[in-house]
Image (cartoon, rainbow, N blue to C red; front, side, top):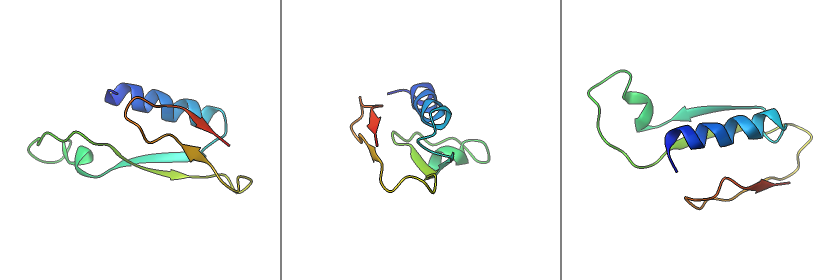
Length: 68
């Protein structure tokens, strides 16, 4: 999954109310501040709505599927 695909999936989840907000964290954010270093992962922090008791996000590389 490309970075743009991950952002598209996160924005879809946000638009559908599955998550309230998200932030990209980890080494990828350093690309904007230091010498670029290739990484092949994406660290994402999410804020879940208070109304959701649980949420499952498929962690597989090809999966942008989620369900309540």
